[in-house]
Image 1: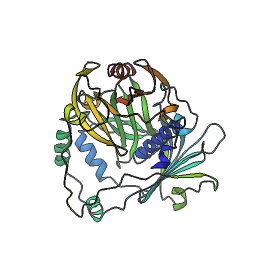
Image 2 (image 1 turned 135 degrees about the horizontal axis):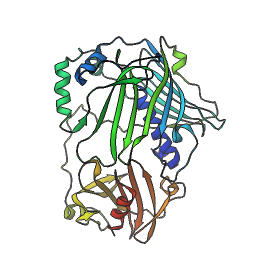
Image 3 (image 1 turned 180 degrees about the vertical axis):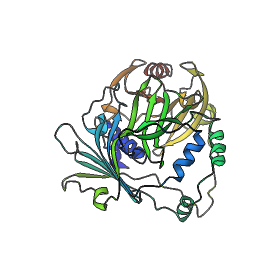
Image 4 (image 1 turned 60 degrees about the vertical axis):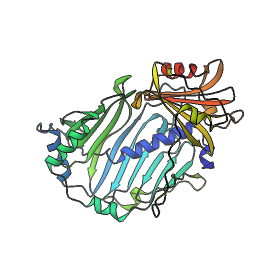
Length: 393
């Protein structure tokens, strides 16, 4: 993990953008037909069943647009595609291997993302850096599950009824996306969603191939924070060379390990978590700040956690995404200038200088006072996070 700690905040956030692009790559495809008309209205369960039973293409080639407004108000600037969004191309073959190429506007190298069953590779052209993530091998049970029967309309409706207990789910909205007949669905948290607004998914009405995804904030319901949509597409075989990349020989390579999965060969003995202020206080070397409320949110729990091998306290307030989490740990001296935190915009908190990351989906504030490092995070506004941070001292 030491390699991760040397990556700047700008690169880390760019990497997050890359993961988002990759995550929506499987849903960012469609078919470009001119003069398309919306499909006939029908219930969501029927539209999803129709999508699941439609003939699947042997491959996809598409022009796409990636939107990234996550850092528009953070004070962190960047011109590379992963940071600021860009237009580009997408290729996907019949095996699900995918490559996305996002075009730079500054004359440098394009950024690219490649994923298959064994790995994810992100090439940041602006930094000439390759990030590699090795994926765990798929089990035989996963393969068996994928080849199962398609749920009936009744089974799909039953699952939608379960989901409706936690999320607001619209019906199937007829329209056109990528110039093909499409359906859309809008999903949003039903309770305590914080700054997360709607998530909109679009798919080809005929074959279920998704056409786009957009994530909105409650701060601006009309402009996506993150999104990927299709502008033009063609269906047909895609060669292996179209879903691979060859970064420059002089590119820096960073291997990004995934968290180790606990072995299931033996049943581990579960240790009950240490909770409650008195119990946690007895385990740590600093005085925990745990007021009854912060920014009007009631304290929910004080819990002992392990932070990179040292004992720390996690204090939570409120419920769901709209809550606030406070991580408290011993200060390890001055923050190195090379640390990602040191490169975030500065903010004054309780009479000391800290750092802050503000996005349309949430805020993170970090500062050190009295020998304790505080990190305040939540899907809350900048004002709410700063108020909560100030009430900890």
